[in-house]
Length: 354
Picture 1 (cartoon, one colour):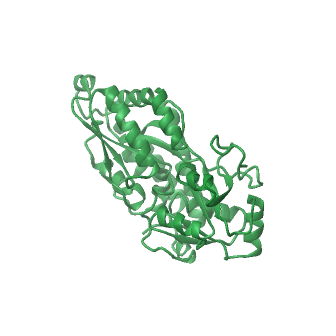
Picture 2 (spheres, rainbow, N blue to C red):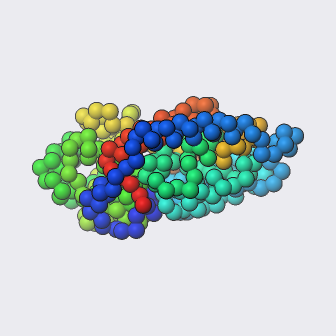
Picture 3 (cartoon, rainbow, N blue to C red):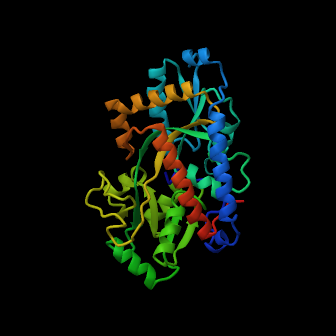
């Protein structure tokens, strides 16, 4: 996911201080808007955009899956696997349409403005939960205008360091960072990205002084990590696993609540002493609010059938994704909970996009 949230900030080497200069909206006002958005979401979902008999025949033409990030990233790979399988199940072509930029909000805007008929939907990850707090001037309200449909899976991230850094364990990393305030540079795909926010949270929880180096994508950042120009990165496991296996970078800990199946010998950050640190990004499918419930149900069922297919699961596992099938209600609650959780973290850190 690190390589997906790669266009939030144009600068490659901006210091940490400007990220915290801007103020944030009052929490009370934000929560009131979120509650109003959820109420409106429920009301809109009950209004059919197409006649009921037409929903019975849906889909009758090709569909579009918006992918909010550039080709080649984890979300893009997952999306294309899912698009192919869902298309076969529904009997229509599903076209994967990459609309990268602005942390996923360009695709989000397109979805919010699309016809509420289910023919356009979006594959997004946990960045969806960041955007309501990161972008105060969005032309849409994520929790109001966009509805979660189906959960796809989740993957923990892994903290890796350059081989020239004199640490072998996560505890040694924390000790080194405390002994050398400001000397440890960590890279990410940009301010507010999925590689930045959890590291800023870790820094706050452990009272560290790290230096954030935002890039325009994880590719050049990984190159600099391998060469030693930066010391650390938090990355999705599939994005960095080849470099771990080849010995080009050193893994220290994973970010989820439990150990990762692909790196079972590596401790979690919680195991290493960071209490309450649980960052396990999810992926899911969204539609425009107001899409008829019968259409949403068909799309939800098709996605779950696709995820149950052994070939799909194998391809997803290759991307480090732990596939699970949830009810729509469970996924919606997760999105609401994470949006609120990250609102608190983002506002406490004073991180905000213009």
